[in-house]
Image (tube, rainbow, N blue to C red; front, side, top):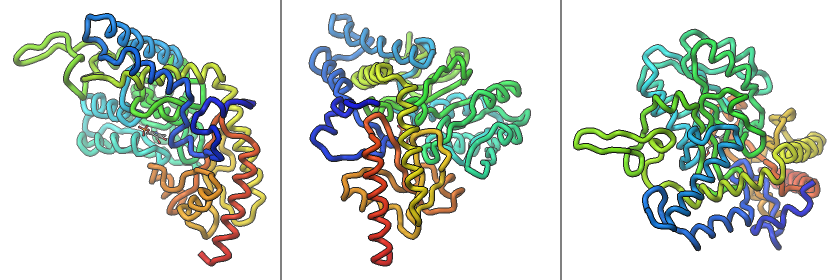
Length: 401
Ligand SMILES: Cc1ncc(COP(=O)(O)O)c(C=O)c1O
């Protein structure tokens, strides 16, 4: 599967790198880089403003990108807001919807699996608006289950802010029944899809999510761009959190009239080259087929987990993961020491709390190692990785770390 795919990635050409840190940022295919270069080489001008031909072209390409991305998640064109990344998208929901529509005593459901970019904006809303943050109890494996979600859902729940796929444990949240139940009590649901959009088919209509956020750089796209999907009726009643150029229709001395969504949420010069790059990244995913991508990653993770299970001295935290993320540690070895050893074998992976400190605390460890797979990884690389784990374990234990 994906035999020649490495050739699509300039950084992998003539490079022994085994890249297992896609959950942080994926590598960038040449087509995406070329598309951004095309903008800078041929029509590097601002959008929505100029009435000359180059500006028309830039605008047309930028809006085309929005259409392609909207279609990719089965949204409408006007429900897709370009942001700086998943972090800004999730902040927008909390700062706009949360600050305007929540009141003292309202409850916001989150989980210990949340990335800080989903958790901290709602913590902030809870503090400022005197709401209560309620945590879905995780099950023994560290998963969000429907039953555990229902156990904390009340008539006071006004917002449910959950991750689609945990960036530490790789688990998929059973969102559909959760969203249905949340809507029955009148709550809105904000989904952090930063780890889902690169790996799972997403259909916002089927999911019925109110908001859904993701980043370009985890799905073959560039840094500096993300997407906030918001359902049309909610976006219509929301206030922009950034005010400035291009988001208004008319400005008077004491007030201004904003444009409709999505433009009222895109003040200032937007990430134009990045939108084009993300559009190209989506085309690349479509070409490879998202279901084939998911199956490939799952197969690599399963294969590696089976090998790691046989090695004494390894603790696996998510042996039943259904995505391409493996959370583990080498017993007695600090994860930061371990990744330094892997680096010497040209293997890049991540150690730390992965900006999700609550789940690391839930695991009762100071940090974890995280290997994450994508289309450019191979079974041969999994074997080399497992050998490197054994080598690191033997080295550190022999020198008495
Ligand atoms: C689950 C999850 N949510 C949100 C983010 C934030 O994404 P960004 O840093 O691109 O804004 C990340 C990034 O690691 C993530 O893994």
